[in-house]
Image (cartoon, rainbow, N blue to C red):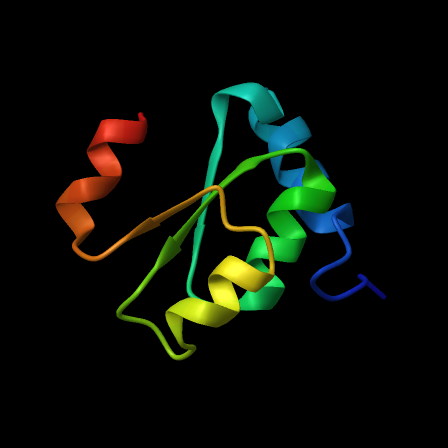
Length: 77
């Protein structure tokens, strides 16, 4: 009964349960749907270039940032 991504319902519930705001959260994903979910949740998104989808899909779906290696995520914390 939980809507699927890119619906933000589950993300907002996770934030609520953990007492974390969207402003202090990063959404890391490898698909356009992940980038849409982040945007609809009001969360900064980081697309990873080593995932299942091409870099262009991440860009076209509004990735705030794109990284090529996991350690690059640290700069956005």
